[in-house]
Length: 433
Image (cartoon, rainbow, N blue to C red; front, side):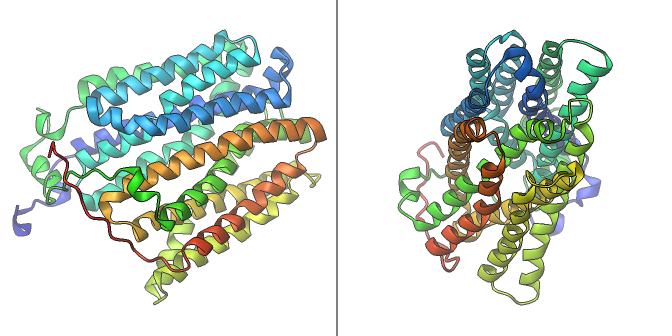
C-alpha cells in the first residue's frame, strides 16, 4: 500500500492492542507459575524435608526442560499455528503448575517442575510470533516491551498471591499452586474465542487490517542452526546468555530462601522485598537501553556504545557479592535490586547485539540458540548452588559467582567479537513459501 494512503495508527482501531493485552497477561501468569515455588520454598523445606541440593535439583529440572523446549517450541507453533500452539503450551504449564500440589517429595516436585519447564518454553516463541502477525514493524518493539513487562509483574504478584492464600486466608500451601496454576486455564477461555490471525478476524476493521499489513512481506526463510554455529558472533551471544541468564534464575528461585536463611524473612514479609527488587529490574531494563542509545546519538560507534553500556551494568552488579555479608536486610535487598537492574540493562544490550551482528532473517534463530544456552547455564548453576550451599552453609560463593559473571561475559564477548562486525548470510527461500 502506498505510504500516502496509509491510515494513521490512532484512527484505525485497537483490536491489535487487545491481543497485546492477552500476551501481557499470559506472560504474567507464566512468571507467577514459575516463581511461586521459590516463594514457598522456605516453608516447603520444613514441610517436605528436602535438602538444599535437592532444591537445586528441583530448579535444575525446570531449567533443563526449558532448554529442551527451546529446541522444538517454535517449530511446533509454526506447524500448528499461534492460536492452537499458545493454548496447548499454556494448558500444559497450567496443569503442571497446579500439579505441584500433589507432590510429596523432592523427586515428585522435580517431575512437575520438568513438565512446567516444557510448557513454559512455548510462551515467548508464541508471543513473539503473535506480535509479528498482529503488528507492523514500527509497533513491534513497543508491543514486545509491553508483554515482556509481564515477567516482572509476575515476579511481584507471586509472593503477594501466595502470601494472601496461605497466610491471610489460611489455606494450605497446595492451594497456592492450584489457584495460580489454574488461572492459566481462565486465560485460555478468553484467548480461544478472541484470537484469530488478523485477516481472519471478523471484528477487525478494514483500516486496521491494512495498517497491520502495511509492511512489505518478509521472505520466508530457514536458517538452520548448523549455518550459524561456525560464526564467532553466535558464540559471543550464546556465551553472554549462558553466563548471565543463569544468574537471573538464581535470583528468581533462591532470593526468598536466602532472605529467610539470612534475615528470617518469611512468606508474610517477602512481598515488599520482592516488589523492590523487580521494580528496580524494570528501571534497569529501560536505563540500560537508554544509555547505549544515548551514546550512539552522541556520535559513539555502535561497538563502543553497546559495550560501554554493558560494562557499566557489569560493574554495577559487582557489589552484590556483599549481600550475604551485610547485617541489615534492606541493604541486602538494595544490593540485589541493583544487581537485577544491572542484569536487565545488560540483557537489553545483549539482545540488541544479535540484531547488530546478524541479518534480520537470522535473528530469531540466534536468539533461540542463546535461549537454549541461557537455560543450560541455569541448569548447571542450579545443581551447583544447592550443593555449595549445603556443604558450606553459606551463600558467599553463589553471590561471588553472581557478582563476577557479567564481567566474564563481557570479556568473552569482546574476545570473540572485538568489533561488532555484521555478518552476511545468504537467504534460503523455504520451499513452502
